Length: 353
Ligand SMILES: *Cc1c(COP(=O)(O)O)cnc(C)c1O
Image (spheres, protein in one colour):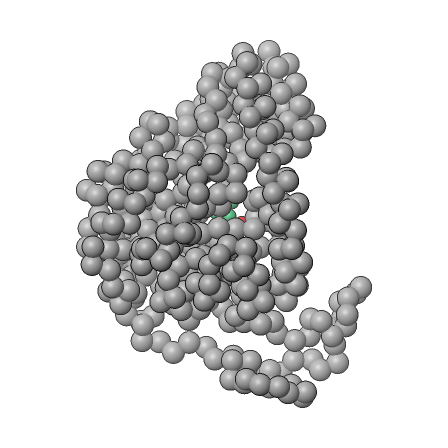
C-alpha cells in the first residue's frame, strides 16, 4: 500500500483558499461583537433566551466534539460533524472525486445515498454485489479497482440486509487499497462487532461514519459524524459550509450526549425485541426466511412481499419494501418498534390470509 493523501484530493480542493468566517479571524476575549452583521438586539424565537440565536454558532463545534471525543475515545481533531452523515458522504465525493473522471465502488444491496451522491457529483459507480450470504466479494472488488478508484463504501452492519461485514475482509481492503475505505457504522450500537474507530491509528486510509439518527434517537436534529486522520478531517473542514451545524442542534446534542445510560437501555431493549420478533416472524406462514441482524431492523423474505406490503399499509403499518432490490427478492425490511408496535405487526401478519 502506498497511501498519500495528496494523490487522492482533487487539485482544485488542494489549491483553493477556504472561506474565512468573522469568528475565525478573532481569538481571545471581547464584549462588543460587531464583526458578523448579526442582529445585536436578539432573536424573535419564542420560549427561549432572546439572545440565544442571533449569533452565528461555533463553526468548529468544539464543545460537541469534546463530548463526543470522551464518549468515543477519539481526539476531537479526528472528528468531523455534519448535517447527518449524509453530509459527510457528499463531502467525500466533493473532496476526493473528480467528476466524469474518478469512480467509487459500492457493494449492493446497500445504503442508497452512496449512489445518489455519486450521481449528483457525476462520479462513476462500480457495483460489486455482495455474495448470497451478504458478505463482500473481495476478489471482485480487487478486480474492479483501477487507478481512478477513490472510495470504497462498506456499510457494516449493512442496510438493508442487517448483517455485519466480516472484519478480515475489510482489513484486506484497508491493507491493499490506496484510496479511502469508508466504513459506514450507522447501526454499530446494535452490533456484536466492535467499531473500526479503534483502527484509525492503524490505517491512514480509513474513514468511519456514525450518526446520532439511529440508536441515539436524534434523527430529527441531523447530526452525523466522520472519524478519520487529521489530514482527511482538515479537508472536510476546508470544504464544509462554515456554519453547517446550527446553534440549536449543538445545544440539544450537548444535552443529549449526557444520556448515554438511557441510550444504552433503549439499545438493549431493541436488541431483545429484535430476537423476539425474529423468532415470531420465523413461525409465520407468510414468512419464508428471516435473515440474522446486527442492526435495529430485520430483513424478512415473504411469500408475496408486494401484496403483504400493501396489506400492511391498509392496516396502518408501514414497513420498507425492498423486494425490487438485488438479492432481496420478496423481502421486507422491518424496523424494531416498541413492544406494542412489534405485537401489532406480528398480529397483522398472522391474520394475513
Ligand atoms: C440511516 C443511515 C445513515 C444515517 O444518515 P443520517 O444522515 O446521519 O441521518 C447513514 N448510513 C446508513 C447506512 C444508514 O442506514
